[in-house]
Image (cartoon, rainbow, N blue to C red; front, side, top):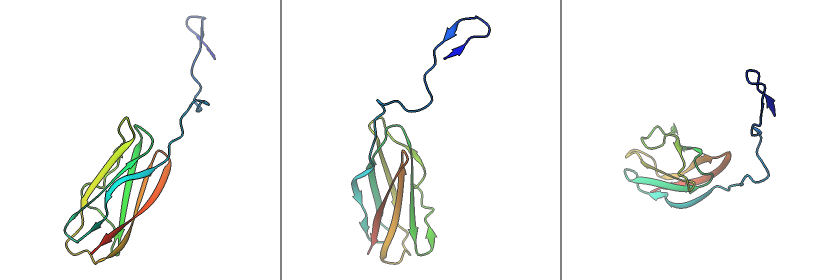
Amino acid sequence: MSFGILTGTTVVTEPLHASAATKHYSLKITSSTLNVRHGQYASVTVKGAPKSKGQISVYYKSGRSKAAGLQAKKSTSKGYITWKWKVGTRTTPGTYNVYISLGGKKITAHLHVR
Protein backbone atom coordinates (compact mmCIF):
# COMPACT_ATOMS: atom_id res chain seq x y z
CA MET A 1 0.00 0.00 0.00
CA SER A 2 1.20 3.52 -0.69
CA PHE A 3 -0.14 6.89 0.30
CA GLY A 4 -0.86 9.52 -2.34
CA ILE A 5 1.14 12.63 -1.57
CA LEU A 6 -0.81 15.03 -3.77
CA THR A 7 -4.34 13.82 -3.07
CA GLY A 8 -4.07 12.46 0.45
CA THR A 9 -5.83 9.25 -0.64
CA THR A 10 -4.71 5.69 -0.19
CA VAL A 11 -3.69 3.87 -3.40
CA VAL A 12 -3.52 0.08 -3.47
CA THR A 13 -0.82 -1.32 -5.74
CA GLU A 14 -0.10 -4.87 -6.90
CA PRO A 15 2.92 -6.58 -5.31
CA LEU A 16 6.00 -6.93 -7.50
CA HIS A 17 6.58 -10.56 -6.54
CA ALA A 18 4.73 -13.51 -8.10
CA SER A 19 1.45 -14.49 -6.50
CA ALA A 20 0.39 -18.02 -5.54
CA ALA A 21 -1.81 -18.08 -8.65
CA THR A 22 1.17 -17.64 -11.00
CA LYS A 23 1.45 -20.56 -13.42
CA HIS A 24 4.68 -22.51 -13.74
CA TYR A 25 5.65 -23.47 -17.26
CA SER A 26 7.95 -26.18 -18.49
CA LEU A 27 9.99 -25.95 -21.67
CA LYS A 28 9.71 -28.68 -24.27
CA ILE A 29 10.42 -29.25 -27.94
CA THR A 30 7.17 -29.82 -29.80
CA SER A 31 8.63 -30.39 -33.28
CA SER A 32 12.02 -30.27 -34.96
CA THR A 33 14.05 -30.95 -38.05
CA LEU A 34 17.44 -31.57 -36.48
CA ASN A 35 18.73 -34.38 -38.69
CA VAL A 36 19.84 -32.66 -41.91
CA ARG A 37 22.54 -32.54 -44.55
CA HIS A 38 24.83 -29.55 -44.71
CA GLY A 39 23.22 -26.89 -46.91
CA GLN A 40 19.69 -27.76 -45.71
CA TYR A 41 17.45 -25.98 -43.24
CA ALA A 42 17.15 -27.07 -39.62
CA SER A 43 14.30 -25.99 -37.35
CA VAL A 44 12.99 -26.38 -33.85
CA THR A 45 9.70 -25.38 -32.22
CA VAL A 46 9.41 -25.12 -28.45
CA LYS A 47 6.58 -24.47 -26.03
CA GLY A 48 7.09 -22.68 -22.74
CA ALA A 49 6.06 -19.52 -20.95
CA PRO A 50 3.75 -17.27 -23.02
CA LYS A 51 4.97 -13.87 -24.20
CA SER A 52 8.50 -14.49 -22.91
CA LYS A 53 11.91 -13.89 -24.45
CA GLY A 54 13.44 -16.97 -26.00
CA GLN A 55 16.99 -17.50 -27.19
CA ILE A 56 18.75 -20.22 -29.18
CA SER A 57 22.44 -20.94 -29.72
CA VAL A 58 23.89 -23.55 -32.05
CA TYR A 59 27.53 -24.54 -31.57
CA TYR A 60 29.52 -26.07 -34.42
CA LYS A 61 33.19 -27.11 -34.33
CA SER A 62 34.08 -23.59 -35.44
CA GLY A 63 32.06 -21.99 -32.62
CA ARG A 64 28.66 -20.34 -32.19
CA SER A 65 26.58 -20.08 -35.35
CA LYS A 66 25.69 -16.64 -36.66
CA ALA A 67 23.12 -17.98 -39.14
CA ALA A 68 20.10 -15.86 -39.96
CA GLY A 69 17.07 -17.07 -38.03
CA LEU A 70 18.84 -17.70 -34.73
CA GLN A 71 17.94 -14.36 -33.16
CA ALA A 72 16.10 -13.91 -29.86
CA LYS A 73 12.31 -14.03 -30.18
CA LYS A 74 9.23 -13.54 -28.05
CA SER A 75 6.92 -16.52 -27.57
CA THR A 76 3.30 -16.36 -28.67
CA SER A 77 0.39 -15.99 -26.27
CA LYS A 78 0.30 -19.81 -26.20
CA GLY A 79 4.05 -20.06 -25.50
CA TYR A 80 5.37 -21.20 -28.90
CA ILE A 81 8.54 -20.13 -30.72
CA THR A 82 9.96 -21.57 -33.94
CA TRP A 83 13.51 -21.03 -35.15
CA LYS A 84 14.63 -22.01 -38.66
CA TRP A 85 18.15 -21.63 -40.01
CA LYS A 86 20.30 -22.87 -42.86
CA VAL A 87 23.15 -25.22 -41.97
CA GLY A 88 26.25 -24.06 -43.85
CA THR A 89 27.36 -26.00 -46.92
CA ARG A 90 30.83 -26.43 -45.40
CA THR A 91 29.60 -27.67 -42.02
CA THR A 92 31.39 -30.88 -41.09
CA PRO A 93 29.09 -33.88 -40.54
CA GLY A 94 28.61 -34.56 -36.83
CA THR A 95 26.42 -33.88 -33.83
CA TYR A 96 26.21 -30.36 -32.43
CA ASN A 97 24.63 -28.85 -29.33
CA VAL A 98 21.60 -26.58 -29.58
CA TYR A 99 20.89 -24.55 -26.43
CA ILE A 100 17.43 -23.03 -25.98
CA SER A 101 16.11 -20.83 -23.19
CA LEU A 102 12.64 -19.44 -22.63
CA GLY A 103 11.00 -17.93 -19.57
CA GLY A 104 13.90 -18.83 -17.27
CA LYS A 105 13.96 -22.49 -18.38
CA LYS A 106 16.71 -24.11 -20.45
CA ILE A 107 16.85 -27.16 -22.67
CA THR A 108 19.56 -28.76 -24.84
CA ALA A 109 18.90 -30.50 -28.16
CA HIS A 110 21.25 -32.05 -30.70
CA LEU A 111 21.64 -31.17 -34.36
CA HIS A 112 22.82 -34.09 -36.50
CA VAL A 113 24.50 -33.02 -39.73
CA ARG A 114 25.05 -35.77 -42.32
